[in-house]
Length: 399
Image 1 (cartoon, rainbow, N blue to C red):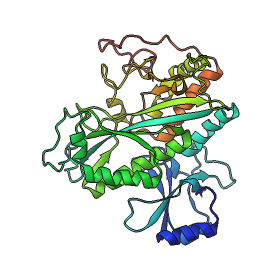
Image 2 (cartoon, rainbow, N blue to C red):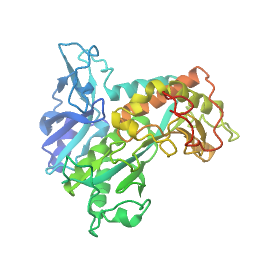
Image 3 (cartoon, rainbow, N blue to C red):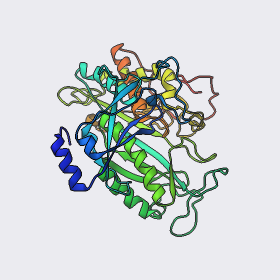
């Protein structure tokens, strides 16, 4: 629903027996916060507020971030984006979920709310006649929901009765072993309008990856946000936990959220490619922006202590901001593709990153590189050797 009237909303709720609406928004960690609201009140346009600090609430529950907001902790309005209204596939009773924006009482966006921040970055692209196209690849683990919380995470017991111990990368058998979960999860994604592409078993035990189809950056961030919400809720219904920590199991593969990014001009042409199909200067300028500003933005791609455990020298979790063509040892990669699909893959972000902030940081850095006509390093032709000695900070070398 793009612009439904109150009558149309009421009719929709009556048609589906909806009694409540989940009014959600992402906090700084990408966790869904919000309130439940009676469907009738929502359809009637009843105003909804929440304290201003909540968008800055962290996974610890703490939201005392002086001096970001005043000690008085005033309210913000929760304004629904009705284009995101969907049935809640995890609810036991008919319910809808709607993503909201946090708006100050004077009508201006709450600048530290993650969705507002991404919108602000996208407005800068719009002002230059450009439209970012983004596609995330999201990895996560399925673990046993009833495991002892004082012990390390355990691989769940699939239907054949033998917990996976690894060495099953890209196995369809092990993916099919949790068919009831996948069937319900796939149906949930369809209900939520999440456009998934390929599904696969990753390298770690009971680790999986789902690629979302490329699209408008804000819409894709909304889908990634709801993807995590749905995965956790549906997994619990099957005695599982969906875990998006960057490094949940010591010695096993980490979980990433690779971000594929391209830019279209007003005519729908990819600005990373020239008319003859060759690489355009904008590609390396965008890349240079990521290399230049990446160290300062790292905490938006790796927000927790655990995030940094994913970065392992010599692995495909790169510890550098080098770039290369089809080179997975670099933090920034240009996949082999036709000119119309030429793109930059940011491989730094972990699965634990807030998708709104991770995408905003990557796009902001790229645009800064284009605006300043920065020059990227030469592409790395050979793989980076694990014998490289680490330095003390992220740079275009290694850490």
